[in-house]
Length: 394
Image 1: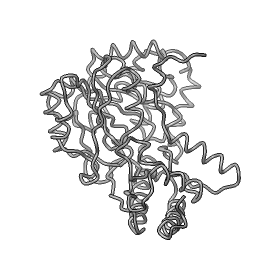
Image 2: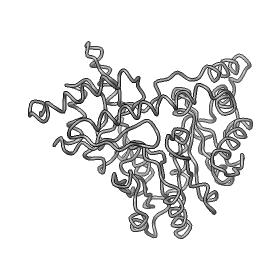
Image 3: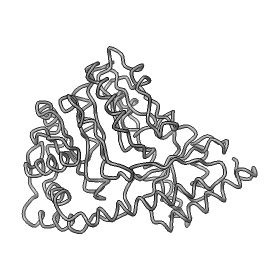
């Protein structure tokens, strides 16, 4: 079959490619520690699973409203509003099979060919992929280690032109774990009002914040009417395989997004939505325990990496990733990623998997046990010693 030319503009996620190679090595008898994939290693909390099973047995196996079940949409605005100090409208909620469709629908509905979209770099690779696919122009906004992987407002404004239609924010941030400050968000809000820019606020890691209170762009005056808030259940509730996400947006725009949903997938599975209600309104004990464990793992991994000569790692405030600076090792990030997997047995991602501004960094996910993290640190330290001696260079 002859593919459409637009397919050449579509990217992918390196994490799944590294995972596939790691699984192949394991099948050959190799010991691999998985720090590459952005997926909680915990099972979905039992009360959520039971709610899903009960929904299946109760007949939640049919089509539902394209925008989602009314009871879940109500639970979403109640939960999201309470956490952000904002009053959302349930008519502005669209529930989707995962969070990625919200990204795609937003870009399809708002971006014409040649329109510019500013996005974080390094950043989640699907942002750039989808911008390019719909015919927009992707404008990278470099995240700076010196600013805890934030950015200067002046740098952001310098990238705004008359063609700028959207700014993508991600906080807490993948791949760095950085969290945007309330002061920076205030300045961003002023710029977006001044230049009439829509924000796609990817807040999928909003519950995974370890230092201080979470801040959202939606808290600032005038931002509810120009923001599409993206969130979901995969990361907080260990529900990656359930495929359940949502967007909160102005109600009029939600109608357009629902039309895209009808054309793409019809609706989101009803029984997963019932499980989502339990996730938001039910017992949070297992979730809170998971978050505490992530914080302990973060501290273990950051301390261990900083103890290795040639590696510097900032303490991330959120998500479950670290993004250490490995420039002193004298190897390109992609070469180092391959070396870590093939020779060391630690699966991780090159910073360049998240954009050109990720060169000189690696991303490690700490969604793995403390025992495995400790073993990974031992392997990494041994590998770095070999690199320093010249034995580990390829």
